[in-house]
Length: 416
Image 1 (cartoon, rainbow, N blue to C red):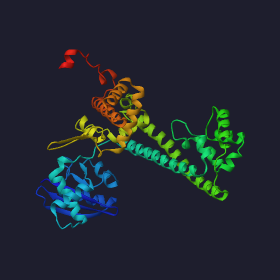
Image 2: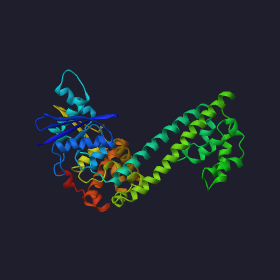
Image 3: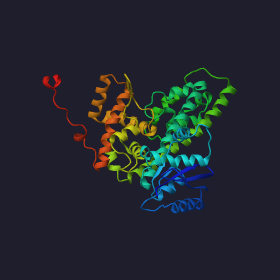
Image 4: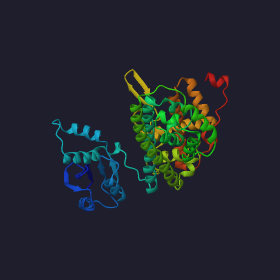
C-alpha cells in the first residue's frame, strides 16, 4: 500500500495525517516538537508500512526547522509546499472556506498523492553545505543591516552635522560612514561643536584606534580642515540631543560591522573546506564570499536540478514567456531565489572588470538595447550555465571552453 504523509506545521504542535493512494485517511495524530513527539511520528509511519527501502514521503509547509532536519536525517523524501499552494488546493475541494489544522495536514498529504511530480523535493545537501548556507545568509543579512544602520545615521547627520558627511564624501568601496575612520572619529566628535575643537593629535589618535596605519598625517589634515568648515547649525540643546542619538545609532552600526567581519571570516573558513571550493573560485568574479553564497543557494546535491535551465529559472536569470492568443511577452522573472539573484548581480558586475569575454558580452547586450541590469542578468545567465556544467562534470573553469571563438562572419553567412 502506498502511503503519503502531510504535516501541518505550527510553533507549539504539529498535526499529522496519513492517506493511502485513494485519498482515504489511514491515521491522524497531533505531536509536540520534541524527542517524544518525533518518536510518535516514526512509530506512526512504521505502522503504516514505512521502511528504508520504501520510505513514506512527507509534505510540510516549511523547508527549515528542527522537525524538517530530523525528517531529512532519516533519509526520507521531504517536500516543502508553499502555504499559498495549500490555500489554493483547499479552495479546490471546499467552497465553505472552512479551515482546520487537521484538514490542512490532509490537504498536504493529498497534494503529494496527486501532484508530487510538480513539486521539488528538498535537496540532500551535505552537513558542510548546510552550514555554509547558514553562515552565508547570516553574512548577507548582516551586510543588509549594516546598510540600513548606515542610512539611518546618514539621514540624522544631514539634519545637524553636514561637515562630518562632507569630510568623508567621495570615498570608494563600503559606505563612507561604515568605514573604521568615520566610526572612530564620530565616537569622539558626535556634534559639530566638539568636532570644530578637535586637535590634529586627537584626530590622529582616533584614526589609529580605528585601525589606520598609513596616510595618517594627510588624512588628519583633511579631516581637521573639513570639521572646521562653517555650516548652518541647530540650537545647542537640539544639537546635543542629536549627538546622543548619533552615538546610539553608531553603537548599532559598530555591532553590525563586527558581525559582517566575524561572519565573513567564519564563512571563508567553512567554504574553503568544501570540495567544490576550487571549481567555484576558478570562475572570474567569484571570490570567497560571493562563491560561498552561490554554493549556499545551489547546494551540493547534484540531483537537485534536472538541467541548467532549471538552475537559471531558480536564480531568476532566465526570462519567462507569457503567451496567450496573439499576445507574446518575454520578461524577467520576479519569482526567484532573491539571495541567489542578488549574488549573481555582484558576480556579473565583478566579472566584466576581470574577464574580457564577459565584458564583450555585456557590451554587446548594451549595444543591442539592454539596460545595465538586463545586460548583467544576461551575463549571469550565461555564466551560471557554465558553472552548472563544471559542477556536474567536476572540472574547473576553462576560458577556452566557456567562451569559444565565434566563427568568422562572411557575406555568405550573414546572408544566410
